[in-house]
Amino acid sequence: MRILQLTDTHLYGDPAARHYDRIDTGAALRAVLARLEGLEGFDAVVHTGDASDDGTAASYRLLHEILDPFAASLGAPLIVTMGNHDVPSSYAEVAGPGDHGGPFQDRVHDLPTGGRVVVLDSSVPRAGYGHLEPEQLAWLREVMSIPAAGAEAGDGGAGTVLAIHHPPLVAATPLLRGLDLDGLDELAEILRGSDVRAVLSGHYHHVMRGSIGSVPVLVGPGITNIVDPLAVGGTERADARSGAQIVEIDEGSGADSVRAWSTEWTSAGDDAADPHLPVYEFGPERVAGILAAAGR
Image (tube, rainbow, N blue to C red; front, top):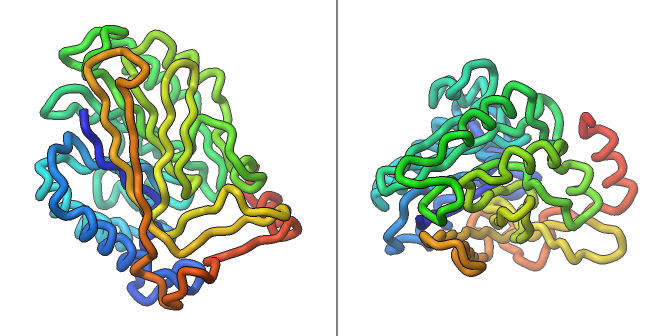
């Protein structure tokens, strides 16, 4: 299985809107796709959330206007995950309801080439952290009880990729740790013994690797900006850069059967046209204020 992972596009319905009053997110996305032109051999294009920044149906129509023809040119389905900036009800106006009713954009995507991508909606209305409701976990448990078509759990076949915006990890920075996914133990219990080969996530706006139980977790770089997880002095900083990630999963169970690599470019949507000027740089007091308002 070969997947192109895109994440954190933060699109707007208003073409004049700018992320942090600076980044034209539509231009940033289009430039990333232009950089990727000529790649081939993908089984899916997976967007791991924060597709929109304003949560409008217009922003989701723009997302599909840009990404549908791109994915079609690769001969691969487009799969979209909800993030904390997304509004599932608005996305449903464009893409329809999720697979088990209610407000959740949880879906199973069986891939034509074998295997499947299971999408979990970890968004919480008006909050930045991630959460899965009991009915979502019950649905996931039922889905995971039957392996992907053509595979048996644990046999190293094509299996399942789980896509969820909030990584089931502990984040690298204080701000992101305050916006992490809760309920990791229950999620790990559901994944234990299943045919899930990898978890793909966004949210952090920087590459990160880890695991939940024995399942690798692969976090992709943001498209609207890239967070610097090594920022010093208790600051939280993001730069005007964009990235993308390729994930390959072999039909084997060895340590090297799941691989990922990524790259980053100077943002083509930066109205300031200054790659050395941070998009934002928050001190400890500002971080504390953001976390206080995060809804947890």
